[in-house]
Length: 303
Figure 1 (cartoon, helix red, strand yellow):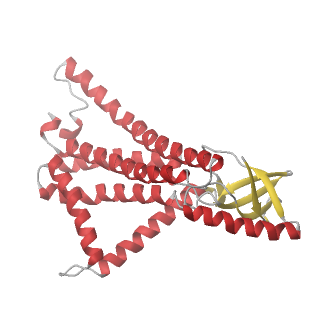
Figure 2: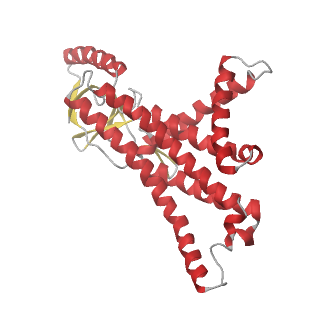
Figure 3: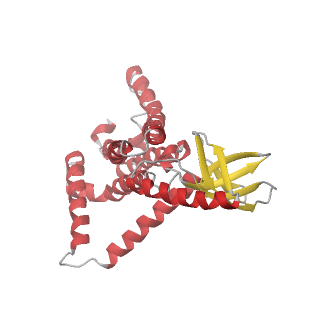
């Protein structure tokens, strides 16, 4: 995929030359089309000064490393997940400060969303008290995945990055990437969800009763079934992570290819499709977590 960008060079500690640049990667919305024209204007100016950079970019399954904090690598997907977390915290603080007996527009919207989600949870848990107890976990999982998926569709994601010049080769490294397009992110979420289910199950019905459904010597059949269920808990991590990663990463690849082939107008329906996919994948992840929690905290399911 041949692309152009305006380079503002600076130098890293390892002797490689870096440059902060805009790359024409995703023509997936009207905002990106505007950005395209802005970049073209800058490119014309850059040609006058001889600063134009032309390079080839690749679709990478692995998230690109931006820098290191000690021995900890900070990737572009990790950076966007931190931005998503900060944005959610800011919104939560603003909503909390404006809570009143007579709700305003913003509070009314959040109360409506909470009531709808609690209604869905009531149908699974059976009562409002239990739903409210596990609401923070389910709502956090849902909002974090959904907002991070939507942030990954913003025009600046994939368009702003570093042009790394190493050994005479130009490589474009995006500053931001959809978190769920990184397998590390989805595996981490899946591990948190699965272990949270086990932890909440132990708190609700006790350690012995909870793990007795996995390890029992009542008869050979129940022993075999229990071992299969225990193995299935680890399989959930794989199914959770690869489902979310596959859908989001495939959507990114689709938008890039469609935007490269037909950059004007045609990508918009696919962009709206990815907005819907981002919501659906977050909803599925949260609902599955809710069902598994309901099964873990229910004493009848342990027999």
